[in-house]
Amino acid sequence: MTSTALSPTLLCSFHSPLASKSSLYHLQWHIPKQVHNHYPFSSINSLSSAKPLVLSNSRRTHLCSAGRRKPTELATSSSDKEGDENLKKVLQIGLWGAEAVYILWLFLLPYAPGDPVWAISSDTVNSLVGLSLNFFFILPFVNLVGIRLIDAPVLHPMSEGLFNFVIGWTFMFAPLLFTDRKRDRYKGSLDVLWGLQMFLTNTFLIPYMAIRMNNADDDNAPIKNSKLGSIMTTGAPLVGLIGGGICLISLLWALFGRMDANFGGIVDRWEYLVGYLGSERLAYAFIWDISLYTIFQPWLIGDNLQNVQQNKVAVVKYLRYVPVVGLMAYLLCLEPKEG
Image (cartoon, rainbow, N blue to C red; front, side, top):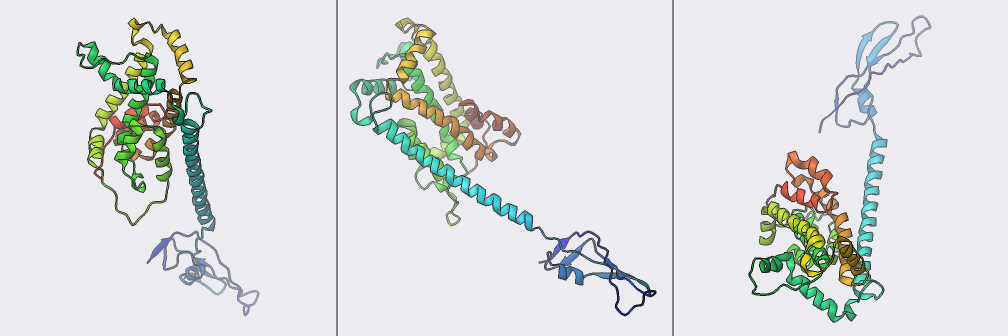
């Protein structure tokens, strides 16, 4: 393999031991601007390629090619890679630690607000069933237009708003996961992962964030998206509009919904929310989910900006830090790729 090196000009003077003081001659070497050799960092090879330029009784002038070596740059690159690897390990340990804390603190231990899973009360179960029936406000709005096959449970609008806000945001994570460039490192089913995240708990997303940081396995071919993944990525703009719309409706519903049901004004509802978060484990867990989504959203979008339309990258790059809005922007500007 032939390489081309550009070397600086070097003046080399050699004194002959046989020459007298008056006839002392010098050798000057010319360093060619382009030197072709098999070992571009070898100074010996470079000197051997030098050609004489001027020869006289008093001095000889030659051009020397000086080899170019960059040990400092190589050492710096190696140090940077080692630093990145150490940071990745720290982040993975932190994520697995967060998963352990999430399960212990929110599910098992009795110290967080509300009841743990093993001592859940009937009131909590009834509340969860009611919130599920009012999923995406479909049943309340159907009742509102006069269709009453099933009457929507009347719950506090703050609890309904908080529940649907988190669900709407989770809904938008589907196309983001199915277009993640590191999704192949997760060997499980993304369909199942997102389904559990959507309908049970956000605890399943934390291990995914840790696993996707594993080193890539070159032996495995890229995994093609499932039917659900293809639908979600192809319809990403629609998913973004639906999810973003639900989040907006949730905020408005929490503040102004069911005004005829004696739930009070904005101040009364805010007081209820504070008490709700401090007494109900489900509501307390939603705050954890919102906090984690606020971290994971810009992280995942930042790793997948190559999926965004070229002229929209700058906008998405900055909006990704805004909860919900950044993910909605990513989905609206997405250019889905096959596989």
